[in-house]
Image (tube, rainbow, N blue to C red; front, side):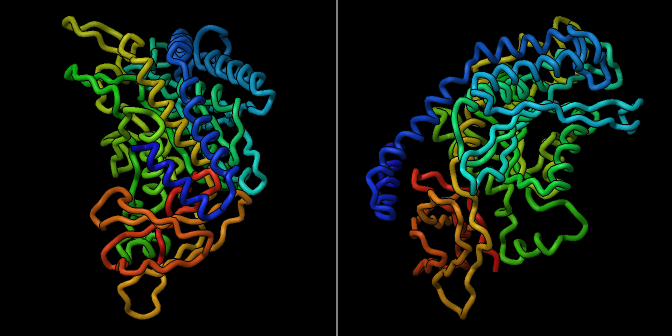
Length: 453
Ligand SMILES: [Zn+2]
């Protein structure tokens, strides 16, 4: 079935482009993604996770001098591993520290240096290299008392799991080239208030970095629920909706006016991730959750969401709170603590592959079209859409997607050619939600854009 869909897409693209090279190239890149995702290694994920646990604690306020204990040792180790991947990539992966001193604040009792480890894989298409996709995990950990900087805080699922997924993606993906830039980020200070992520996201705003999507992986270590049931092929993807502000910005109002509250950029990104994650990672289901995060919890994506970036969060399907933010102890025969014995390394690998599918397709695809508008000249039961032309040289054309207003995901699509306006005859804008995607010559599509009135 999937092969048929792909073949159909290729035939459509032939119609647009007329070149037979496109077909060969198309197969190559999609096969390349599958091959790349196969290289994600559960064994390496296990080795790396056990190494992170071995630092005893990675509390943001813990020892920074020791080479074997505390957050300093942990980040230097992550940095040195990323440098190895960089060497394997011929130096294309660029590894750096991103650091600042956080003055005392709530949950930061003394001035503390917050250090993120950043590995950047620059895009190779000049028109796309400024377009950034970020994937993150937080390497800091806590035990049952978030102020305790000495206690054993293995942080195996929270969030060594996300950290090693990001590291493994950096290792595997940096051997390949993508059009847009991918940033593999492991951050600190999450447990005290997302400090590392806030700093990077603010730097992105201040420097006009063009962040088109951000995915955080936080608590992706276990497929086992607290009732013992196992869900190895599911992952939750948290995707925020309308910002919870007292007054809506004009940007938000423009969506709300026509029922587009479910079609802002974050949810468009989530739909893209679900679609490609399930397409490229056999058997995996990405369960979108249409809310920012779980009750009483937060994550590094929120630092990006607050600044207007499209950012989402992956988490395991059912959390076991005995294994998070808990002192390592046994009580009445029950083992508490965020220990590696509760981690499923194959599961982390599968979630990493979903991330890899999302990042690679986003970074191969053109940018989402700009300035997508719903034509409103007169009353009609057709739908007229227009948008600005993309600039990528490998652009093939555009695809219109649509769905019933109550459907969470796209139901239909039509390739409309390399045009900047189209009329969808007999499809009333009153009855469906529409989106426009840019499509490249290999069949990679951008996340959809909602047509504003
Ligand atoms: Zn966490």
